[in-house]
Structure formats: structure tokens, C-alpha cells
Image 1 (cartoon, rainbow, N blue to C red):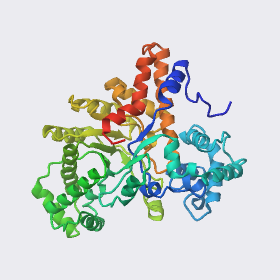
Image 2 (image 1 turned 120 degrees about the vertical axis):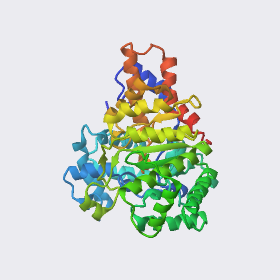
Image 3 (image 1 turned 180 degrees about the vertical axis):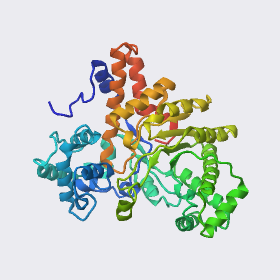
Image 4 (image 1 turned 90 degrees about the vertical axis):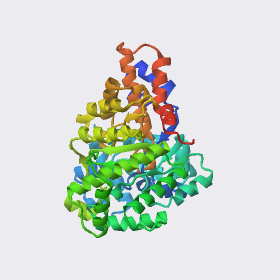
Length: 467
């Protein structure tokens, strides 16, 4: 039997029936990812297995470094083939890491390769995969079609011109590709040089002369409006923790004035500024019926030496441990008191906080929308079998798993769509195990219907994207 067989991760008859009859064939709504819109607009053809699989994949880079692979073969100047061969040599040493599962699931689903990857077959796998990558079926559009991806929501700065999204919309591609508004750089008054460079781009994008706080907010709103006109219905924020410091309009204007004068904000003023802006962004989202996403608890760029050498987002991030609930509760409550709390997804990167997050969402369900406040799927270091189960168990015990909007790739790679299969198998195994134990009724119509909804229908109904 091959390692990745039809019942992979499905340990009971009930799990197998749930997956094969209810979950397997559901389409994908990838409502949060980092795919480059240009790759979709240009229907990118990948030159080799390195380009589609290892380029930019810091999960693999971390494993290779841990395995003693020289940086030259990770992110350095070595050839694409040599980097792939170094990865293949590392794969057998990733046993029990989710990379081992993902690697073989991806090889099978994209290339029909059922072998366990190692140094002995790396040359052959390289040649066979590259031959298939030369076909239209494994260009960007072919991949989206193969995996029944109904919509993709990319992650975009307010200053982006969205020209690639416009080109995609005009191309006739069946998959809808929508922008997501991620204004993290608007927070950076503690880094005034970078803030002012970004503000110049914002001014140009919005065609507004930014002379003070009011025109700055007008420019952000104009870009938010533009994203909406392009079909965008989600925003996203990558922050350590929520912000909830009192900050008046006058205080915010003074902080902005100092940043424009290249005076770095103190930690106290930066927290006030971020609190002010997060409320502003929440109101914008609520006015348009958007969904706000908060990605919390990532401790980024821990290795100063390698950050300076390689830059951010190269594999030196980890789980943070900042206090969460006090500020998060105040932030959500402030918006709720104004009737300006949008649909919100809270993504937690520290599993020790799972039950706190799962209970927090229940405080702000108001009956207006099923599952209005969501406890998001396990992300980054937690988008693996064990941690996805932890997240779903906490949500089940404290809320409604039945209203969960399910999985997303959160990936820069077109090779990541089997992550949805991995999630679906994990979900069905969890539910099937409960059925076998008598913890859930022996009703496939009931339990299977819930599984099917979590895989696609809940997200379809929740986000209001045109599909």
C-alpha cells in the first residue's frame, strides 16, 4: 500500500465514509492566502520543481537548517536543482513533522508520484515533475482548476494598484481572485522613515495630498473603497496582540505630526496610534459588511544576525506569548458599543490560549449573522493535524463547530492546495472517531452535512464573495 492511500489519516469506517462521501469533492474557497496576484494574472508556468515548491517556503528552509544544510543550499546562490536535492536529502529526517505528510501528499496530487522522496530517487522525481510542469495543466490556472478553487483572496497593501486583479477579472478565469486589505504599514509611526516612504505611496495611490491626519484617513478610506469596488470583502491585520489604549483624535493627530517630522513614536504613543487606527479600520469594515481578520501571537524576526543577512519572512519567526484577552475584549467591545463590530476571525498562534479565544468569540455573537465572530483555523505552526484538532475541540466545547468557516492555505505556494485535503481528512477523522465512540449520533446525514458545510458552504455563505 502506498504511504498516501485513499484512507490516509482516516482511522475508522465512519471517518472514511464522511470524507469520501461528504468532504472530498467539495470546492475550495481560499479566503486567506499570499499567492502573488501577478503569477495568476500571467498564468505562470513554473520552470522547475524548485520554483513551484521550494521558492519562498520557510517551512522547508527551517527543516533544512535544522538538518545541518548550509545556507547556500537553502536561500543562497546554489542552483535550483542542487537546492531541491538538498531538500530531498532532508525529507527522510522530517518523520513526524507535518512536512513529511505534506511533501508526499503534494507529490502525489500534482505529479502522481507515490514514492517516498529521498536522495535515491531525487534525480528521477526532479525530471518527472519538471516534465509535467511544462504542460498547461500545471500552470497557475490549471492548478486552480484542478483543485476546484472557486475563489482566492490575496493579501494586499492599501498602496497596491490592483492592476493584476483587474487583469484577472478581465481574463475569463473561472476562479475569482479578490484583494484583501492589509494596512499593517499604517501602524509604523515608531519607524518614521519607513512610515513616510509608505505614506508617499499611499498619497499617490489615493491621489490625495496628505497634509495631516484627516487627509491620511481620507486616503485610507479611498483605498478601502477601491478594494471594495474590486470585489474585496476582507481585511487582515498581523499584530502581536489587540490594541485598546484610549486615543483621542487630537492625540492621534499629534502622533501623526511627529511621525511626519521623522520623530519616532514612543511605545506608549505607538500603542495609542495603533488603537486609534484599529477602531477606524473596524468601522470601515463594518460599514461595508466586510470580514476583519486578526492574526495574533507571531513573534517575528528573532534572529538578528540572519535577519540582517536574509531579511524578514525567511524562517526566523516563532510563537509569541503576549497577554491577549484584556485588550482584545476591550477592542471588540468598543466597536460593538458603536454597532460597528464587523464579522471577525481571530487566528491564535499560541495553543495555550485556545480556550480563551474560543470563549471570547461567544461574547460578541449577536444573532445578526451565524458565527459572526469566528475562532479561525490553526495557522502557521498550528496548521497541522494535532493543532487543528486542538482548535476544533476548543471551538466545539465553547461554541459551534457547525458554523466554522474552515480551512485556508495562508500560503505563497501553488503547491499548497492539498492542505485543504489534509484539513478535511483531519476533520472527518475527528468526527468519525466521535461517531464510533457514540459521542455523536450514527447519522451521516447530520454529521456529514456538518462536515460538508465546514469544507465549503459555511465560507461561501459567510463572506459574501461573488463566486
